[in-house]
Amino acid sequence: MGFYYENGELVADGVKVRDIVEEVGTPVYIYSKKHFVEQFKRFSGAFKREHLVCFAVKANSNLAVINTFAKLGAGADIVSKGELFRALKAGIEPKKIVFSGVAKTEGEIEYALSNGIFMFNVESKDELYTINSVAKRVEKRVEKRAPISFRINPDVDPKTHPYISTGLKKNKFGVPYNEALELYLEAEKLDGVEIVGVQFHIGSQLLDTTPIYDASLRIAELIRELEKRGVSVSVVDVGGGVGIVYNEEEDKEPSLDEYARQVESAFEGFDVKLVFEPGRFLVGNGGILVSRVVYHKTNVNKKFMIVDAGMNDLLRPSLYNAYHKIEPVVKKGREKVVCDIVGPICETGDFFARDYEIEDVENGECIAVFSAGAYGFTMASNYNSRPKPAEVLVEDGSFRVVRKRETLDDLIRGETL
Ligand SMILES: Cc1ncc(COP(=O)(O)O)c(C=O)c1O
Image 1 (cartoon, rainbow, N blue to C red):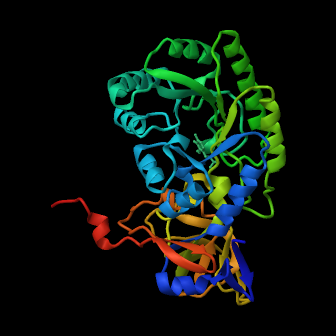
Image 2 (cartoon, helix red, strand yellow):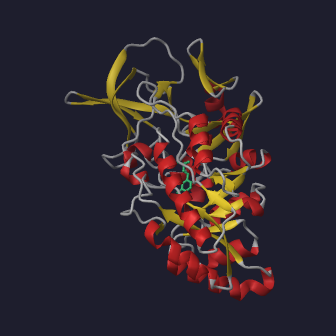
Image 3 (cartoon, rainbow, N blue to C red):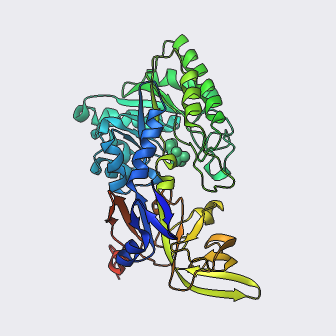
């Protein structure tokens, strides 16, 4: 399943990566549909209780990828009008879409309401009132209240990278735990919204899910308090965050069974439907970024392998100092070299790996950056006026381009002199 070597050649579910590159060029993202499907089944299959898995579209928003999950019955977790548009185009049922994000605008709220989404995860009092007033304005068209959950910030440390920690009180996300009760009581009085649930998401790439359990216990306590005040919820949305193995020598995948038992036990006895918003877990290891070596150079005694993909194509190493395994597409038993693997962008931060030991791949040959299926293409930009790479999906022993490589004309679309 996914990506593996056969006689020194990197293969994606039965298709040689070299053959894809020959036809599509580099840089290119290659995805394994089989991996996506199996990860979804593993994730969903871990739970005994009724639940809904809403794929976090921000992790990988290619239509073919979202559609893969739609066909498996998934919903979507979206954070913008654009992601909602994509999710609908990809065949996700509106009734299975949850809308997260700290700054939903009136236009976005109206668009979501008129498409009849499952619920808004409200992140502040200001937003509550905006949703209420937009709902009342468009009520006649949609004839219903806006379904809401509050995103609670449980102030639990997820013990992950600070840039992807979201559940601490110093983070911008959610409403403070201690103010939640009052907000629910206030929301109850509004006639444009209907309380359906409670949501939290404490961070991403958690290799130990115990902080999610700790947060779940706090949320369960809040639900008990709400019930005492006559406010009932029918949905608990646990967010995403389950981590994946990037570095085989250091990372250990969290136990899905343990995660499922933790969450289910925290909400045992509550008559609620559980919702999950996994992103990285479903797609992270189902994608690679393939890039061609352009040049080698040595500055004094520092060696560089310069490739044709840059931080504009895959930002994670530059943004988070994230580790990605990198291997030659064809292993030839070449001598190993310790070098920085860098892109062509005019930034010192443009690197994929530093002081990295790899076979000394010749100019013109390709390398693969692994674990690039999540927060890879979705974070890509046109910085340095570089067209975005192609995306390819491997399915049933063949491959197809699911997003064409951008052209120079794509770069200036919409611009005028
Ligand atoms: C609200 C929310 N839900 C879900 C996710 C997906 O997280 P992950 O990819 O770690 O599963 C994120 C990621 O940032 C998020 O902010």
